[in-house]
Length: 136
Image (tube, rainbow, N blue to C red; front, side, top):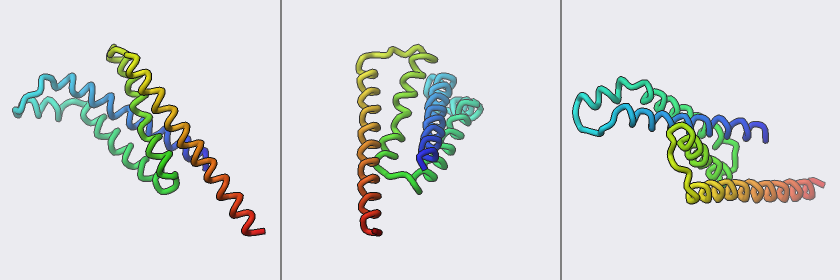
């Protein structure tokens, strides 16, 4: 089951990161924002828009699959890891500044996911011990 979670969350992370990166590229292609048919045509004809749509669909399908089996607390927290990956990717690809606020925020997100996963593991272990004692 742990392998399912790890692979599932890595796939979710990849889809979410892909979607956000494609949105950024689509926004750069379609800039400047204007409410006109020519701007809408630029957005529709941009392949990055379709990459973002595929990322959303993949994220949704992966998230729904994970929610069937994963505990909601750690799952919800882990679903926000894309903030860390998108921030790192944006610094590398788009040369956006990596400020200490972003680094601190990323570290806090990682710590939060770790703490929730650890707490869920402790609860699962306790429940397994209680179940074993009841069966004996």
